[in-house]
Image (cartoon, rainbow, N blue to C red; front, side, top):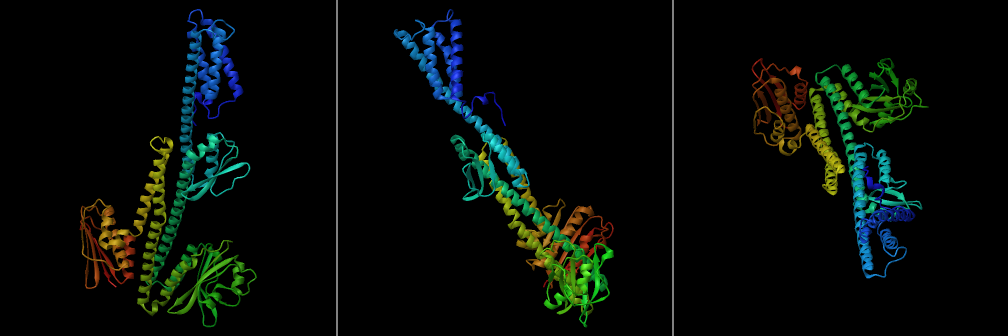
Length: 612
């Protein structure tokens, strides 16, 4: 807070009138003594100027009324003590009367000027204090992650600036009482909070609050709420993207194992392990239904290997169990507690300390084949999306079981996984655009309005609002790039040609593009886009090429993609996880991808994808 030498004198509320009387009397006495010492060397009437000093001081500190009284008292004292005859009012001579009237007029004029200067100085001090207040409150409210935790410091700073014994900022509507006045803080017509101040707040202070401080506080609260909402949306989006990435990686690992015709046992173990890890379970087990009404454990997983659920043995479906409930209902089920439940599976669960379980059926060609269950020892139930996560893995398990019945079923399942991943990417991109990006745009607009409200003389507050605006604009750009990294909007709006231009616009390498293919099915465009993106990115990173070419065309119901460069060659499909994944993706929709990269002869990544 700024401190000025005159801040103790130029206060909105002057000191007491008793102090004014003491100060005025002292000044008149001092002025009288000074005039007495000078009356031999200075003309008598000119000495009246000395008495104007006290008038200026009293007017400046106590205001107009006290200044008028001081003016009259000073003229009277000058006349009584320094104008002959001494000791009485010398009003018998016209010359003396005129001089005293002129002195009084000058004193009153100085009183008016001093009052005006005092008013301007007080207002300037208040404006400076308000600028400091806005800057500190912006720092408190816009930099804290938790808005509520910042309100205490902001309230204390507000009370300090206004000279109040207390002030409280609330984020909810609060009624006043006999000790407090409630000032509603609004965002347009909607209330966003309440400012509570003492009921005996001076009228001038309340006017200052309503006219100058509340609008600034309302703008800061709006910006802080938008920032908090934006941060929450970003955290949720990042968490969702992280969970999606983990889930898709796990699906890919299992799908790759299934696609390579891995053994059923290996697939069962992989699916059970991934389900346990993704759901946050302590144990997981896959069971197969037998014709005699029992189930056999075919795979198990545990965070501690020595605590796995029984595998290879048959258990009856008596009593309470996930397997029994899935068989009865034919869909996902949950058991919140095994306390008091009967049956061998319930007894096993209690012996292992299991509190809750969730399970999904494994259906092969319309027949209930088995069940997969995840179990937890903790008191917190499984998340609501656990069943949907498990369902994707049970589909892969069912596909592995049906491999002996036909390769086509495997390809269809993998295609569904790819479609699900693409649709999820599109959903995340829409959520980012409609959620976090919209909040960011709203925040940017609010901050611009706040900066405009502060004006050019906003001082530190304007600088902080400008900093917050720059950070919000950078965050908006980062969210936009994040959304484009999932599936660019240009691909969805303009097809493969527009999506490819989006990739190449960010590259420093010259690339020639020849794409004659028009709009294609969305899943096919997504696969083609990822192939072009991975191949060109590898070219920039590894090939040392001076030029690259991208070509795509449709012929005989097939989309042909060709990405080549004039680099050093030597690329291998098995050494590139990205290309290997695209190879599997192409195979999942009935296509193929190949890599030709002789040493020193450049690299060609070519794909042929059926249009269905």
